[in-house]
Image (cartoon, rainbow, N blue to C red; front, side, top):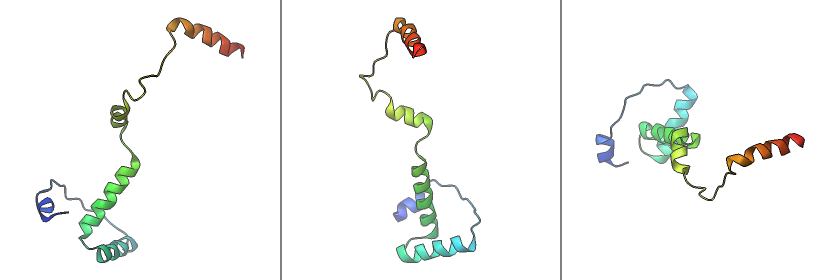
Length: 88
């Protein structure tokens, strides 16, 4: 992250409690990779959010219209299909 981004990025200050083990591991990562503790935590939060996937509305927006050749039988055929399925 650039100094400009760090100084002017809209943010919210959040206080969290970590176990001693979590804090020790984070401190180790900061020493290994450089940067700040806040950057390491923000990267971890970003990775967690990305792994959770999009919200339902976003997923619908991203996939809308991707199957344009999808066909649905006419309403008149629905009853025939239900009867065939009921007979086995």
